[in-house]
Length: 300
Ligand code: URA
Image: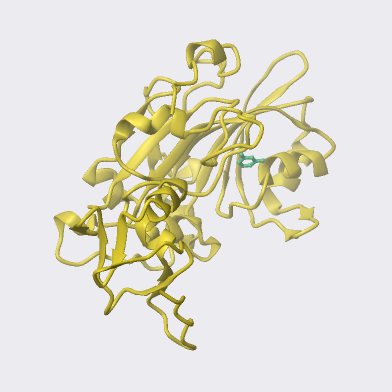
């Protein structure tokens, strides 16, 4: 079958490979192999081209003879250890978050990313609108990190982090920064930011002439990692989704898109509000890197 041309200005058009992976059927690699094996039909005819354009409004896609159904929306919270990538496959063969969540039994994508050396709360979902909502800086969903700075920090350095520092991709938004405590050589901070730029916290600390020794994301909005063991996952509860301003479409007639949360969040979750549960100490858990051996890479 000749590949369809992508019509201009049409919106609900996706490649066949993407249609399969977004429906939660499997990864894009899985999708490519099913397509190559001839198991995928569009309007009753096998299509062997993963880049074949599918019109979601009118084309009927089947996988091994069964109509492709959109997977129920699912929202998973993983305590990502250090040493795991938030990508599906790594050319260097390093472990990925899929090694830890494979037993969830569905295809979910990480919402945003955490660096290899960052541990903590990672949400994975098949609900693209929710992922977009959490990551779009316009929505200003706060992400909270505990940081072990590479040096002792002065009040002036902390004030600069709070007010916004100049990075090569622009000045950072005001952040909530709390000095938690000090050791002989390091300051421990809690930082809440409402953007999610690449390596943002690390770059912020570099700009104030320090660095990051350890970085753990402890919360997204009011959702906290709690006492979930490192390397383990659980599903987000309906209450947690609601607290993020999201109604699970499978439990309600209509998903609710929240308004911009910027002001509301900074009022509700600022440490001054007294509205939040205390965050765990950075070393309250065994160090993620210390525990690397406890997460042997499962076979794919
Ligand atoms: N900021 C960083 O520097 N790294 C992360 O992984 C997350 C936020």
